[in-house]
Length: 336
Image 1 (cartoon, rainbow, N blue to C red):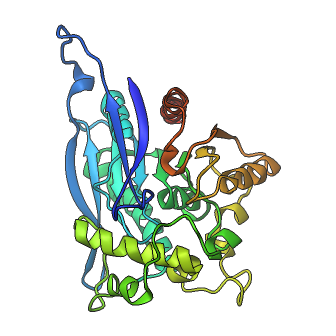
Image 2 (image 1 turned 120 degrees about the vertical axis):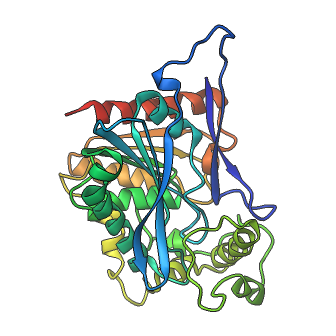
């Protein structure tokens, strides 16, 4: 099976918001269905309501009442776009094969809310999972692996710092451990044709409506333009956090996983390309250095020459590293 993460474009030239996973499976005509081939049962749940905003999670579970380990997916999209519907096929196939419960989360999106509120959504999602998951869908909440890509990789790392009880392990695909680094405030030349300020602002804050997903392609495209404008002007960190890291140094530390690592931080596997122009590769090496300092088990799988989403990476190496990530999840969930 050849597995590969790829980025899809929401606005023509921008290839780094919505994550899709494609796969090719070669099977014999004589293959017969087994229990592991049976599709998981999908249900949608509201895990919190803020005023009139319902924040939801999709749960995919096997039949039966047996308690089963959980894999959580947190979508990417710069904290501005994305949806729980953007499910990585590779991980869903793993959960189908191994009969794990799979949970894909939405969260409120910036800039209508800021990172402190998004972090509260993250904590509330796991509180709901622990309190309601066992009886609603047979979740064995003693064994939870959190996974996510890009901004979802950031939130995956953040879960290791702010969620209680801590997840069993984490898998971050091209994520970042800081939200206040110089790269988050620098003007980027890698984010396409300049987007005028008026055009960018027209795509967000529509009638004060708070979004939890961008399943509407037009909405996603408009908000993608807003993100590109922020990166082009160096305003991304301020735009999604509401905190000026230069004027208020240290105020974002609690939202930066790289600054919150302790010896009990969960084991983590990270995958990153060395030529990533959206989330710099050093974001993962910085995490690895701090994890080493605190004696935390970790793996960093490096894709030489690969862009964001492992685009342009050697297909064989991409497949190998994605397979290793799947194996890591299985290893962690097998532990009692």
